[in-house]
Length: 116
Length: 113
Image 1 (tube, each protein chain N blue to C red):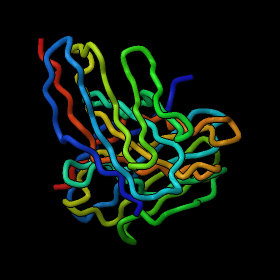
Image 2 (image 1 turned 180 degrees about the vertical axis):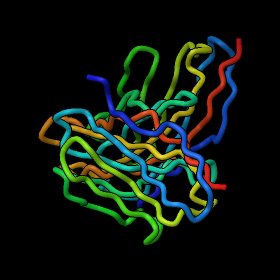
Image 3 (image 1 turned 30 degrees about the vertical axis):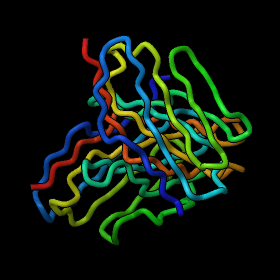
């Protein structure tokens, strides 16, 4: 398996623009997570899905952020409008879940977002 | 109560030495404690994990020590190597099918020759 795939790897955008980050989880994994990593706040869980259904979005910072998982092999994280403070590395991760006997999360390579 | 506190923030160890990273938690419902390793430009990857029914788990040069009464756990890297230079995150989860993992703030380890 290719692992978790994220695109784009780097995104530079201007304040006010819409940004869409994409993730393809590992095939067969039931859980998908979106994280944000910054020097100041470390690794923060934004939202996670189970079988394409959002389970916990309490980490989504504000209404400018939205996430969808239309099917088992694709998820998006959208920021509209983007602000400079959104600059961070965004990670997608997936896991088999308890049914698979594991809590291990497999992280993608991340998308480095810079908002100017 | 959901926090996991990690220290130190950074650590420099000589090659062959022992690296020790400490974590503490408050939520007694946590019952799964993984450590993730992250190299620059990469996503974190699971290194080793422990459940509170054991006090120690060893995998190669990496050992987790767990003290349930003190609500503390630590990662020991024996015979540290330059290739171990990375950021290490401790984490905790409630388990029981609850997949949300709370991460510590990370420790940047540098192993110098």
